[in-house]
Length: 367
Image (cartoon, rainbow, N blue to C red):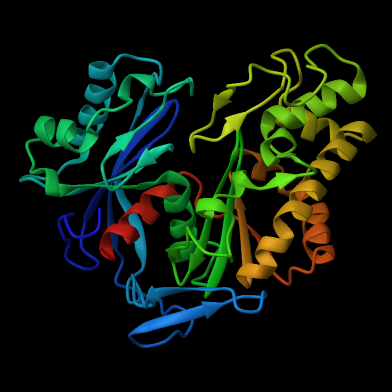
């Protein structure tokens, strides 16, 4: 909500929340005082950034200095369980209770990392048919939280949770302030952030629609019908003929369920082994499990590679639940990205649940 969100002292304590499908974490994030300079960029003005496609580009006000002289760390945090299917007032009270547990005296500003589909400018989401947060559809979340927290509406800001995750890794994790970086969170869906000097690029010819990787289609189908925890579980169930296979990754209700980024989940019968179990089987010599994981990551690299190349990213950071099997994911994904012509350094995310908290603080610091 550029232009209205209350400003913070650069590097000073920032109150943030990360809202997930099963929990909410409220935290205080502050600068450590360590000087961390980003990769060199234009000093001021407007830069036109072009990628691998002649004539493609986008313009942005230069923001190479966001958080540039500050290291970031989570100083205090509280996590509370959250029932995403609860009624409106119950959901709001969980968010408020978590905030009150870490709020300093006075009326601090809050920056909240919210899952999509959510409009951070208006502070309103449309979660109809998503299976999560449906009771918050159409609710002016800024006004509702401001009233309950006793702060002015201008003290409440929002950013996308997957983008916050990426910014956190860029600022204090595996991204190491790369000039251009792509971050993916792999789990029930594919969350993403295409970052230019730490700023998310959500339009133009260099990125997928809205800067969201889950909008990429692979072989004529949505990417998440091939790359998601449900799709991987379904692929293994079908390959082994075990219970839980749906017959196709997209054979669920056409509306589907959604992950924390608002992207559609498909397939994955309840009786299919979990991704962790499939990974463990692969490590124990299960050839089918290893092949399913490799095939899934090869598909991801094939779909993502052209966009990484076009965006000109020098680094790709992979986080989320599936990244816990990095020893099995890294090689096939790196190979597929290279085969697609993407010259990029591939890294596993480092910050875990701190990533969106730090990212939300860096985002707020640059408003």
